[in-house]
Amino acid sequence: MFQKIYTTNNIVTLKIDAEINDRKYKKISNVFDNQISKFGKIRVFLVVDHYPSLNSAESLYYDMRVIKVYAGQIVKIAIVCDRTWKKTWIALFGLFAKIRIEYFDKSEYKNAWKWISGDS
Image (cartoon, rainbow, N blue to C red; front, side, top):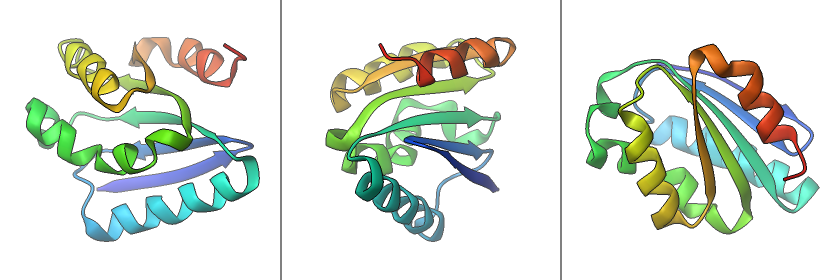
């Protein structure tokens, strides 16, 4: 299930542990729209607990469709996840979406936050 959305200035934090259905997609889109109207561009801090739909590159691409829509307004994305083999899929998604995306293991949560909130 979709857990929470937090906002801290221009950073939108999404904590998810299930597929992003249409209702959840709309809620995320509304938050993105609101933050983009305030800050122009946003950063996304995505914390993903293991869930089945991230077990294939195709399902990751589908679940990240909200990112594709807002790619032009996203500066960078930090993804904190529990499966290192997903790092390759996340990197490929970043190339297709043309967004700076960095993968962090769950043990690197603080480093991920430092990276997403930093100037670079």
